Length: 406
Ligand code: AMP
Image (cartoon, rainbow, N blue to C red; front, side, top):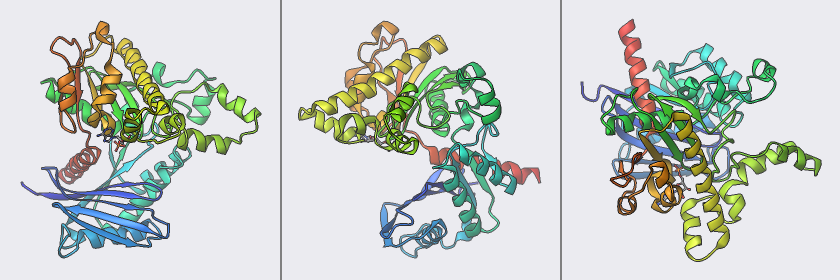
Protein backbone atom coordinates (compact mmCIF):
# COMPACT_ATOMS: atom_id res chain seq x y z
CA UNK A 1 0.00 0.00 0.00
CA UNK A 2 1.33 3.48 -0.84
CA UNK A 3 2.31 5.70 2.08
CA UNK A 4 1.50 2.91 4.46
CA UNK A 5 3.75 3.98 7.32
CA UNK A 6 5.48 7.18 8.45
CA UNK A 7 8.81 6.55 10.12
CA UNK A 8 10.96 9.06 11.98
CA UNK A 9 14.71 8.42 11.88
CA UNK A 10 16.87 9.99 14.60
CA UNK A 11 20.63 10.35 14.79
CA UNK A 12 21.40 11.82 18.21
CA UNK A 13 24.81 13.23 19.03
CA UNK A 14 25.86 14.72 22.37
CA UNK A 15 24.76 18.24 21.34
CA UNK A 16 22.80 17.65 18.14
CA UNK A 17 19.89 15.67 16.69
CA UNK A 18 19.63 14.94 12.96
CA UNK A 19 16.24 13.67 11.87
CA UNK A 20 14.32 12.63 8.78
CA UNK A 21 10.68 11.73 8.41
CA UNK A 22 10.05 9.04 5.77
CA UNK A 23 6.99 7.72 4.05
CA UNK A 24 7.40 3.96 3.72
CA UNK A 25 7.74 1.63 1.94
CA UNK A 26 8.52 4.17 -0.83
CA UNK A 27 11.36 5.74 1.21
CA UNK A 28 10.11 9.25 0.41
CA UNK A 29 11.64 11.98 2.60
CA UNK A 30 8.82 14.17 3.96
CA UNK A 31 11.03 16.33 6.19
CA UNK A 32 14.67 16.60 7.11
CA UNK A 33 16.10 18.58 10.01
CA UNK A 34 18.94 19.29 12.37
CA UNK A 35 18.94 20.63 15.92
CA UNK A 36 22.38 21.94 16.86
CA UNK A 37 24.17 23.24 19.93
CA UNK A 38 21.78 21.60 22.41
CA UNK A 39 22.72 22.70 25.93
CA UNK A 40 24.27 25.96 24.73
CA UNK A 41 22.88 29.48 24.87
CA UNK A 42 22.35 29.84 21.12
CA UNK A 43 20.84 26.61 19.86
CA UNK A 44 19.43 26.34 16.37
CA UNK A 45 16.86 24.06 14.76
CA UNK A 46 16.48 23.88 11.00
CA UNK A 47 14.05 21.84 8.92
CA UNK A 48 13.42 21.42 5.23
CA UNK A 49 10.07 20.17 3.99
CA UNK A 50 9.38 20.02 0.29
CA UNK A 51 11.96 22.71 -0.47
CA UNK A 52 10.72 25.10 2.20
CA UNK A 53 12.93 25.96 5.19
CA UNK A 54 11.93 26.52 8.79
CA UNK A 55 14.48 27.89 11.28
CA UNK A 56 14.09 28.25 15.05
CA UNK A 57 16.73 30.05 17.10
CA UNK A 58 16.19 29.61 20.81
CA UNK A 59 17.89 28.16 23.85
CA UNK A 60 17.44 24.36 23.85
CA UNK A 61 18.54 22.96 27.21
CA UNK A 62 18.47 19.21 26.58
CA UNK A 63 17.40 16.42 24.22
CA UNK A 64 13.87 16.26 25.66
CA UNK A 65 13.41 19.95 24.90
CA UNK A 66 14.92 19.40 21.44
CA UNK A 67 12.29 16.72 20.80
CA UNK A 68 9.62 19.29 21.70
CA UNK A 69 11.07 21.64 19.05
CA UNK A 70 11.17 18.79 16.49
CA UNK A 71 7.49 18.07 17.25
CA UNK A 72 6.62 21.76 16.69
CA UNK A 73 8.55 21.88 13.42
CA UNK A 74 7.15 18.62 12.03
CA UNK A 75 3.59 19.72 12.83
CA UNK A 76 3.99 23.39 11.85
CA UNK A 77 0.76 24.46 10.13
CA UNK A 78 2.46 25.98 7.06
CA UNK A 79 5.94 24.43 6.83
CA UNK A 80 5.40 21.14 8.67
CA UNK A 81 4.98 17.64 7.22
CA UNK A 82 2.26 16.14 9.42
CA UNK A 83 -0.76 17.35 11.40
CA UNK A 84 0.03 15.39 14.53
CA UNK A 85 2.75 13.13 15.96
CA UNK A 86 0.21 10.30 16.11
CA UNK A 87 0.83 9.89 12.35
CA UNK A 88 4.35 8.60 13.12
CA UNK A 89 4.05 4.84 13.44
CA UNK A 90 7.66 3.92 14.20
CA UNK A 91 11.04 5.43 14.96
CA UNK A 92 14.50 4.24 13.87
CA UNK A 93 17.63 5.23 15.80
CA UNK A 94 21.25 5.25 14.82
CA UNK A 95 23.23 3.65 17.65
CA UNK A 96 26.99 3.71 17.31
CA UNK A 97 28.19 0.76 19.42
CA UNK A 98 26.40 -2.56 19.64
CA UNK A 99 29.51 -4.53 20.58
CA UNK A 100 29.26 -8.26 19.85
CA UNK A 101 25.63 -8.38 20.85
CA UNK A 102 24.04 -7.32 17.55
CA UNK A 103 24.52 -8.51 13.99
CA UNK A 104 21.56 -6.51 12.70
CA UNK A 105 18.96 -3.93 13.69
CA UNK A 106 16.61 -4.76 16.58
CA UNK A 107 13.37 -3.52 18.11
CA UNK A 108 14.13 -1.54 21.30
CA UNK A 109 13.20 -2.98 24.67
CA UNK A 110 14.23 -2.02 28.19
CA UNK A 111 16.81 -4.86 28.17
CA UNK A 112 18.23 -3.51 24.91
CA UNK A 113 18.63 -0.08 26.49
CA UNK A 114 20.80 -1.59 29.22
CA UNK A 115 22.96 -3.34 26.61
CA UNK A 116 23.46 0.01 24.83
CA UNK A 117 24.30 1.54 28.21
CA UNK A 118 26.88 -1.20 28.88
CA UNK A 119 28.65 -0.42 25.60
CA UNK A 120 28.90 3.27 26.55
CA UNK A 121 32.29 2.47 28.03
CA UNK A 122 33.50 1.63 24.49
CA UNK A 123 31.79 4.63 22.83
CA UNK A 124 31.59 7.32 25.53
CA UNK A 125 30.89 10.15 23.08
CA UNK A 126 28.13 8.37 21.19
CA UNK A 127 26.18 5.67 23.03
CA UNK A 128 24.98 7.86 25.96
CA UNK A 129 23.67 10.42 23.44
CA UNK A 130 22.01 7.68 21.35
CA UNK A 131 20.33 6.32 24.46
CA UNK A 132 19.16 9.77 25.57
CA UNK A 133 17.60 10.10 22.11
CA UNK A 134 15.80 6.76 22.36
CA UNK A 135 14.40 7.64 25.79
CA UNK A 136 13.32 11.14 24.73
CA UNK A 137 11.69 9.81 21.54
CA UNK A 138 9.84 7.10 23.50
CA UNK A 139 8.32 9.83 25.69
CA UNK A 140 7.41 11.88 22.63
CA UNK A 141 5.93 9.13 20.47
CA UNK A 142 3.88 7.15 22.99
CA UNK A 143 3.31 3.54 21.92
CA UNK A 144 5.15 3.63 18.57
CA UNK A 145 7.83 0.92 18.27
CA UNK A 146 11.50 1.98 18.22
CA UNK A 147 14.28 0.23 16.33
CA UNK A 148 18.03 0.51 16.98
CA UNK A 149 20.41 0.27 14.01
CA UNK A 150 24.03 -0.22 15.03
CA UNK A 151 27.09 1.14 13.22
CA UNK A 152 28.95 -1.99 14.32
CA UNK A 153 26.38 -4.61 13.22
CA UNK A 154 27.43 -5.07 9.57
CA UNK A 155 31.02 -5.74 10.62
CA UNK A 156 30.14 -8.59 12.98
CA UNK A 157 30.91 -11.01 10.12
CA UNK A 158 34.63 -10.10 10.33
CA UNK A 159 36.66 -13.23 11.21
CA UNK A 160 38.68 -13.45 14.40
CA UNK A 161 42.03 -13.27 12.58
CA UNK A 162 40.99 -9.80 11.38
CA UNK A 163 39.31 -8.47 14.51
CA UNK A 164 41.75 -9.55 17.23
CA UNK A 165 44.66 -7.28 18.12
CA UNK A 166 47.96 -8.98 18.90
CA UNK A 167 47.60 -8.31 22.62
CA UNK A 168 47.46 -10.96 25.36
CA UNK A 169 44.21 -12.86 24.69
CA UNK A 170 42.86 -11.99 28.15
CA UNK A 171 42.41 -8.37 26.99
CA UNK A 172 39.71 -9.66 24.66
CA UNK A 173 38.20 -11.98 27.28
CA UNK A 174 38.24 -9.51 30.15
CA UNK A 175 37.87 -6.14 28.45
CA UNK A 176 36.32 -6.92 25.01
CA UNK A 177 39.30 -5.29 23.29
CA UNK A 178 38.90 -6.08 19.57
CA UNK A 179 38.14 -4.40 16.26
CA UNK A 180 34.41 -3.64 15.97
CA UNK A 181 34.34 -1.31 12.97
CA UNK A 182 31.89 1.54 12.36
CA UNK A 183 29.92 3.22 9.52
CA UNK A 184 28.38 -0.25 9.05
CA UNK A 185 25.01 1.09 7.90
CA UNK A 186 26.74 3.10 5.16
CA UNK A 187 29.05 0.24 4.04
CA UNK A 188 26.07 -2.14 3.90
CA UNK A 189 23.91 0.37 2.01
CA UNK A 190 26.51 1.08 -0.69
CA UNK A 191 27.47 -2.62 -0.93
CA UNK A 192 23.83 -3.55 -1.66
CA UNK A 193 23.46 -0.65 -4.10
CA UNK A 194 26.70 -1.64 -5.85
CA UNK A 195 25.54 -5.27 -6.20
CA UNK A 196 22.31 -4.08 -7.75
CA UNK A 197 24.16 -1.59 -10.04
CA UNK A 198 26.42 -4.44 -11.20
CA UNK A 199 23.45 -6.77 -11.73
CA UNK A 200 24.73 -9.20 -9.08
CA UNK A 201 23.15 -10.88 -6.06
CA UNK A 202 23.79 -9.04 -2.77
CA UNK A 203 25.76 -12.07 -1.52
CA UNK A 204 27.56 -12.57 -4.83
CA UNK A 205 29.80 -9.53 -4.94
CA UNK A 206 33.33 -8.70 -3.69
CA UNK A 207 33.94 -5.03 -2.99
CA UNK A 208 36.14 -2.49 -1.29
CA UNK A 209 33.84 0.24 0.06
CA UNK A 210 35.35 3.60 1.03
CA UNK A 211 33.26 5.90 3.23
CA UNK A 212 35.08 9.23 2.97
CA UNK A 213 33.40 12.01 4.91
CA UNK A 214 34.40 13.87 8.02
CA UNK A 215 34.90 10.42 9.49
CA UNK A 216 36.49 7.93 7.08
CA UNK A 217 36.56 4.16 6.95
CA UNK A 218 37.10 1.45 4.41
CA UNK A 219 35.77 -2.11 4.32
CA UNK A 220 36.66 -5.34 2.54
CA UNK A 221 33.46 -7.11 1.50
CA UNK A 222 33.48 -10.77 0.40
CA UNK A 223 30.27 -12.25 -0.98
CA UNK A 224 28.35 -9.24 0.36
CA UNK A 225 29.70 -9.59 3.92
CA UNK A 226 32.23 -7.43 5.72
CA UNK A 227 35.48 -9.37 6.30
CA UNK A 228 37.68 -6.48 7.42
CA UNK A 229 37.42 -2.76 8.10
CA UNK A 230 39.74 0.06 9.02
CA UNK A 231 38.10 1.45 12.18
CA UNK A 232 38.78 -0.55 15.31
CA UNK A 233 37.80 -0.67 18.95
CA UNK A 234 36.84 2.96 18.42
CA UNK A 235 36.36 5.13 15.31
CA UNK A 236 39.92 6.46 15.70
CA UNK A 237 41.82 3.69 13.89
CA UNK A 238 42.47 3.45 10.17
CA UNK A 239 42.28 6.21 7.59
CA UNK A 240 43.34 9.80 8.14
CA UNK A 241 40.15 11.82 8.85
CA UNK A 242 39.09 15.45 9.18
CA UNK A 243 40.42 15.74 12.73
CA UNK A 244 41.37 12.14 13.65
CA UNK A 245 44.79 10.55 13.29
CA UNK A 246 43.81 7.10 12.03
CA UNK A 247 46.61 4.50 12.37
CA UNK A 248 49.53 5.38 14.65
CA UNK A 249 52.41 3.59 16.27
CA UNK A 250 50.96 3.03 19.80
CA UNK A 251 54.39 3.77 21.27
CA UNK A 252 53.84 7.43 20.29
CA UNK A 253 51.39 7.60 23.20
CA UNK A 254 53.92 6.30 25.77
CA UNK A 255 56.55 8.61 24.36
CA UNK A 256 54.28 11.66 24.64
CA UNK A 257 53.16 10.68 28.15
CA UNK A 258 56.83 10.56 29.16
CA UNK A 259 57.12 14.07 27.66
CA UNK A 260 54.39 15.26 30.06
CA UNK A 261 51.15 14.99 28.06
CA UNK A 262 48.14 13.67 29.98
CA UNK A 263 46.09 10.75 28.53
CA UNK A 264 42.93 12.91 28.35
CA UNK A 265 44.84 15.61 26.52
CA UNK A 266 46.16 13.10 23.97
CA UNK A 267 42.65 11.71 23.53
CA UNK A 268 41.46 15.19 22.55
CA UNK A 269 44.45 15.85 20.30
CA UNK A 270 44.18 12.50 18.47
CA UNK A 271 40.41 12.82 17.97
CA UNK A 272 39.85 16.54 17.46
CA UNK A 273 43.08 18.26 16.49
CA UNK A 274 44.81 15.78 14.19
CA UNK A 275 44.09 14.39 10.72
CA UNK A 276 43.73 16.91 7.90
CA UNK A 277 43.39 19.75 10.40
CA UNK A 278 46.47 18.77 12.38
CA UNK A 279 48.74 18.24 9.39
CA UNK A 280 47.65 21.31 7.44
CA UNK A 281 47.14 23.65 10.41
CA UNK A 282 44.43 25.13 8.17
CA UNK A 283 41.21 23.13 8.00
CA UNK A 284 39.57 19.73 8.46
CA UNK A 285 37.55 20.23 5.31
CA UNK A 286 38.68 18.76 1.99
CA UNK A 287 36.90 21.41 -0.06
CA UNK A 288 38.73 24.19 1.83
CA UNK A 289 42.05 22.40 1.52
CA UNK A 290 41.63 21.86 -2.22
CA UNK A 291 41.10 25.59 -2.64
CA UNK A 292 44.11 26.40 -0.48
CA UNK A 293 46.25 23.93 -2.43
CA UNK A 294 45.23 25.68 -5.67
CA UNK A 295 46.61 28.97 -4.40
CA UNK A 296 49.90 27.29 -3.48
CA UNK A 297 49.62 26.47 0.22
CA UNK A 298 52.10 23.63 0.70
CA UNK A 299 50.63 22.37 4.00
CA UNK A 300 47.24 21.85 2.30
CA UNK A 301 48.91 19.78 -0.42
CA UNK A 302 50.76 17.69 2.15
CA UNK A 303 47.61 16.96 4.19
CA UNK A 304 45.68 15.90 1.06
CA UNK A 305 48.59 13.73 -0.11
CA UNK A 306 48.81 11.92 3.24
CA UNK A 307 45.02 11.45 3.28
CA UNK A 308 45.02 9.87 -0.21
CA UNK A 309 48.15 7.79 0.43
CA UNK A 310 46.58 6.09 3.47
CA UNK A 311 43.47 5.19 1.43
CA UNK A 312 45.66 3.78 -1.32
CA UNK A 313 47.55 1.61 1.20
CA UNK A 314 44.30 0.18 2.56
CA UNK A 315 42.98 -0.49 -0.95
CA UNK A 316 46.17 -2.45 -1.67
CA UNK A 317 45.90 -4.50 1.51
CA UNK A 318 42.17 -5.23 1.00
CA UNK A 319 42.85 -6.31 -2.59
CA UNK A 320 45.17 -8.91 -1.06
CA UNK A 321 42.58 -9.86 1.59
CA UNK A 322 39.92 -10.37 -1.10
CA UNK A 323 42.24 -11.76 -3.79
CA UNK A 324 40.91 -9.05 -6.12
CA UNK A 325 37.40 -7.64 -6.24
CA UNK A 326 34.60 -6.62 -8.59
CA UNK A 327 34.57 -2.94 -7.70
CA UNK A 328 35.84 -0.23 -5.42
CA UNK A 329 32.99 1.96 -4.16
CA UNK A 330 33.34 5.57 -3.05
CA UNK A 331 30.85 7.33 -0.83
CA UNK A 332 30.57 10.11 1.81
CA UNK A 333 30.96 13.84 1.15
CA UNK A 334 34.50 13.46 -0.22
CA UNK A 335 34.02 10.19 -2.13
CA UNK A 336 30.84 11.48 -3.75
CA UNK A 337 31.96 15.00 -4.58
CA UNK A 338 35.69 15.37 -5.00
CA UNK A 339 37.07 14.34 -8.42
CA UNK A 340 40.42 15.82 -7.36
CA UNK A 341 40.71 13.50 -4.35
CA UNK A 342 39.50 10.51 -6.42
CA UNK A 343 42.23 11.25 -8.96
CA UNK A 344 44.83 11.39 -6.17
CA UNK A 345 43.71 8.04 -4.75
CA UNK A 346 43.58 6.13 -8.05
CA UNK A 347 46.68 7.58 -9.72
CA UNK A 348 49.27 4.92 -10.70
CA UNK A 349 47.23 1.83 -9.89
CA UNK A 350 46.95 0.51 -13.47
CA UNK A 351 49.33 -2.40 -12.72
CA UNK A 352 46.76 -3.60 -10.19
CA UNK A 353 44.02 -3.45 -12.83
CA UNK A 354 42.53 -0.18 -11.54
CA UNK A 355 42.21 2.73 -13.95
CA UNK A 356 40.17 5.89 -13.61
CA UNK A 357 38.43 7.56 -16.58
CA UNK A 358 39.38 11.22 -16.25
CA UNK A 359 36.36 12.66 -17.98
CA UNK A 360 33.81 10.40 -16.21
CA UNK A 361 35.53 11.22 -12.90
CA UNK A 362 35.24 14.96 -13.47
CA UNK A 363 31.64 14.91 -14.62
CA UNK A 364 30.25 12.67 -11.84
CA UNK A 365 29.31 14.38 -8.57
CA UNK A 366 26.73 13.41 -6.02
CA UNK A 367 25.00 10.77 -8.15
CA UNK A 368 25.45 7.04 -8.69
CA UNK A 369 27.69 6.03 -11.56
CA UNK A 370 30.95 4.47 -12.71
CA UNK A 371 34.19 6.36 -13.16
CA UNK A 372 36.62 3.64 -14.34
CA UNK A 373 38.22 3.45 -17.77
CA UNK A 374 36.74 0.88 -20.19
CA UNK A 375 39.81 -1.39 -19.77
CA UNK A 376 39.92 -1.23 -15.98
CA UNK A 377 39.72 -4.78 -14.61
CA UNK A 378 38.28 -3.51 -11.34
CA UNK A 379 35.36 -1.12 -11.59
CA UNK A 380 35.23 2.15 -9.64
CA UNK A 381 31.75 3.23 -8.57
CA UNK A 382 30.49 6.37 -6.86
CA UNK A 383 27.40 5.67 -4.76
CA UNK A 384 25.84 8.38 -2.56
CA UNK A 385 25.22 6.87 0.85
CA UNK A 386 21.84 6.99 2.56
CA UNK A 387 22.24 5.89 6.15
CA UNK A 388 18.92 7.40 7.25
CA UNK A 389 17.08 5.71 4.37
CA UNK A 390 18.67 2.39 5.33
CA UNK A 391 17.59 2.86 8.97
CA UNK A 392 14.04 3.65 7.80
CA UNK A 393 13.99 0.45 5.70
CA UNK A 394 15.27 -1.69 8.60
CA UNK A 395 12.70 -0.12 10.91
CA UNK A 396 9.90 -0.72 8.44
CA UNK A 397 10.93 -4.34 7.89
CA UNK A 398 11.21 -5.11 11.62
CA UNK A 399 7.95 -3.41 12.56
CA UNK A 400 6.09 -5.16 9.72
CA UNK A 401 7.60 -8.51 10.72
CA UNK A 402 6.55 -7.92 14.31
CA UNK A 403 3.03 -6.98 13.27
CA UNK A 404 2.82 -10.08 11.09
CA UNK A 405 4.11 -12.24 13.94
CA UNK A 406 1.36 -11.21 16.39
P1 AMP B 1 30.38 14.21 5.17
O1 AMP B 1 30.89 14.00 6.57
O2 AMP B 1 30.01 12.93 4.47
O3 AMP B 1 29.31 15.26 5.07
O4 AMP B 1 31.64 14.80 4.31
C1 AMP B 1 32.26 16.00 4.66
C2 AMP B 1 33.51 16.16 3.79
O5 AMP B 1 33.14 16.14 2.41
C3 AMP B 1 34.24 17.48 4.03
O6 AMP B 1 35.65 17.25 4.09
C4 AMP B 1 33.90 18.27 2.78
O7 AMP B 1 34.89 19.20 2.47
C5 AMP B 1 33.83 17.18 1.75
N1 AMP B 1 33.14 17.67 0.55
C6 AMP B 1 31.84 17.93 0.37
N2 AMP B 1 31.61 18.43 -0.87
C7 AMP B 1 32.82 18.50 -1.49
C8 AMP B 1 33.26 18.92 -2.78
N3 AMP B 1 32.41 19.39 -3.69
N4 AMP B 1 34.59 18.85 -3.06
C9 AMP B 1 35.46 18.39 -2.14
N5 AMP B 1 35.10 17.95 -0.91
C10 AMP B 1 33.80 18.01 -0.59
